[in-house]
Image (cartoon, rainbow, N blue to C red):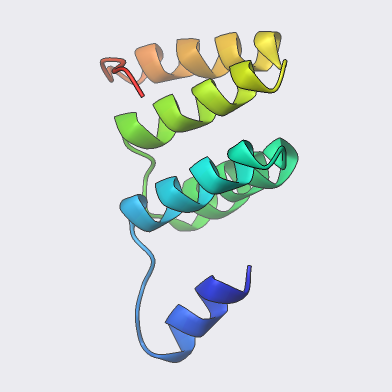
Length: 88
């Protein structure tokens, strides 16, 4: 996404809040696959580590967009990491 490139070019590093906001926006416009890409390929591979809000946001987006099995899988991953789910 262009905003991340712009941030990096200005010496800014996206944090978990930045990623969570982006994932939320992508899910709200139905771009769940792109949201998952940012979650799995960018955050988990390159950092920062996703937090409970990031997980909850993506779980909610997956569920809202009909990806129930993937939402449940991610919810279980959240619990397996010792994170306590919240309400998004």
